[in-house]
Length: 323
Image (cartoon, rainbow, N blue to C red; front, side):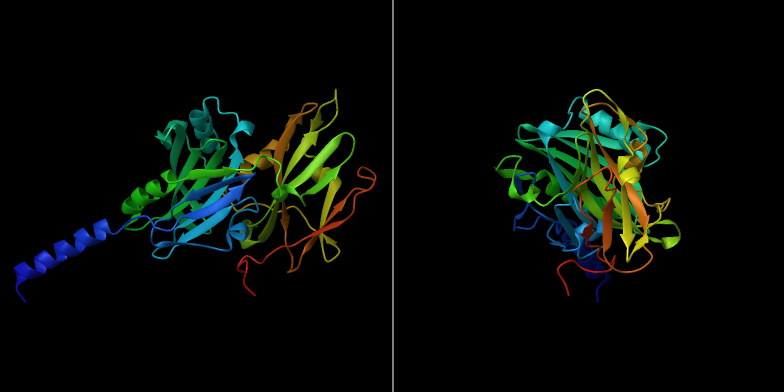
């Protein structure tokens, strides 16, 4: 075969592969805090079913790239519950602490607009599930919500091209319906409460601990209902026992190289003082010794009418929705 012809074929293949990245024509949807959104995945990505096991019970949507080890997780909050003062730089400083950067300025940050609303992008160097990734983290504002998209992009030869189509995907987020903050999705929450304290479980997640130990992460909100007295925010650890097959689970430790979402920050917050009327999120980690569901056992002296509550714990390799 003519060498000149071979050269043109190679150039053509490079050109075609360079133009192949595009958004899927299908629009995906997800709902959180009463708001329904739509967006488009990159064409080679597909919706996954195990995102709540892999990331957090608070995750609203998950997807994975069929051509690489890249994944997506989405969460969202009503924006009227978020302090948006100097939002971009404040989040950048929080990410600096969470991902152990020397300076906040070392984290790539970009502000942009999606229509008349604001968007923020951060790119971080991180490790997840024992693999190295570029985390492209987006916050997209809508009429009533703030959407957080975590794209974990594999460190391979296509990461630059992938970053471009990921950016298009994130910017395609649109709010399509708002049913208000109080919706049926909020019913069935696990709450332990008395006259001065409210503990609400908000997330159940499997994570990797030290020495590959299986660890259960329970995320919750602590609310101080007292009118004139502050409390320490570690009330979950003081008042709730977590057992498995009758055995009290011991405290677990997150693997040092696993910066999953905001777990380190939430663990540190438990040492803070919570003023009267204040609320704060926290997380507690527990070593799982065996398979099977766990039981939340509240202190009956503090929560007089509370019942023990079982929670389902999926295996880390189990796919949600499969048998």
